[in-house]
Length: 197
Length: 172
Image (cartoon, rainbow over all chains, first blue to last red):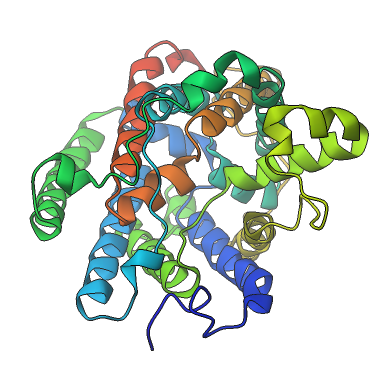
């Protein structure tokens, strides 16, 4: 069956929100079972005492990237209906830097904070409300950076095009780089002083 | 301590499961996973309720308000409701349900809460600027091999490593 199923009307869009909840349940279950409800475990990736985030994140991105490429190759998914994040150079970099600062201060990112909320982490509950405050501040002062927010638009730019590679070659390189990082991470973790949490 | 961490999944197994879920999400909906969009929808809904005239006039909120649809009726809002349920189930199965402030023994609960609030504000702000967070911009964007996904990922983690030095006392 050709996907994506909802955009092609193979599944009635009326099911959209039900599917969102089911996918969310799986998402929350996987994140919590992997330890992402613990801010001290998440922060470990930045101090070298726990590289779970790195391993889960890159394994997931590569698994999905290979799967999507394979589905496309087999004609199981219409790539023109798959959402590609638009590239706005400056906002992506500046927004990313601000998020990195938020990550190291708060110990969570938005998705992981909701898993912390679910199991009773009071710091995650505080973080989840603060997220909304951050959105509120962004919206209130939006005119100040509206021009910047819309700047540097490159359309639906693809990373392999930017590097002059084929998608398959890029995925191969990504796998090799990730494996190298996993080996290095394990070695670093063995040398860094253990942190109990 | 080791008993507790043993209960977590192997990270590569967790990664493959997350990757397969992301693939299934693309196959069904044509889009990936997300999280910060739900915080945005909730914020827009609250402002629209408390100060409707302001919400309609302010450029940023007005983009997400329409007459025929409640601002909370968004795919990501339902997905986050699912995240809460799924994480609760996982936590319950592994006996991890407990109200507590998790923090390094070197800082107080109060300090941890203050840092969580400051971090949440920064992350909420940055996620709007970058059009998505670690889930919607970085992970989902990387799966489709979009340039935005890889740039977002490098900016978030690169910045985290740079700032980690200044905040080390709060963690180690």
